[in-house]
Length: 122
Image 1: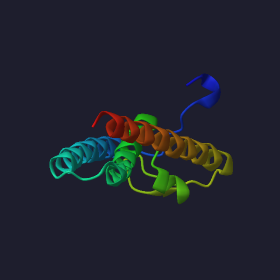
Image 2: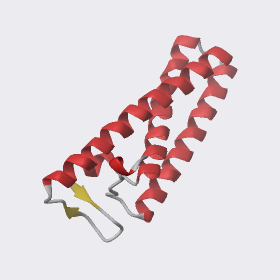
Image 3: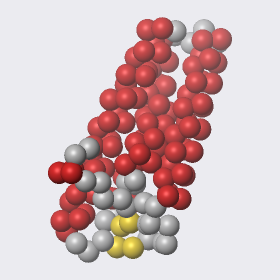
């Protein structure tokens, strides 16, 4: 991102680590489900349900990457590993909320792409 879109973190390194771990766990879970769906002969339309764990995985990855928790953003709160703190600066909350919107958007697109690729390949 350029300097005009400087990231304003609302989570610290500990929060980023939690979200990264969530992303990894959910992606592995999704891959295990894909394998099981294939083994059990589950029809492709049902395999589209893999979008849900894929979305959660991507949400974790993008939150960690952008140092922004979408839930804390919705509550106008930040936790930089020292506990929740209310954000009183409205321009700051607007910027963080825009970051959260981008995270939702990118997570949706990435999860959809992964799911579609898996449906085509497998």
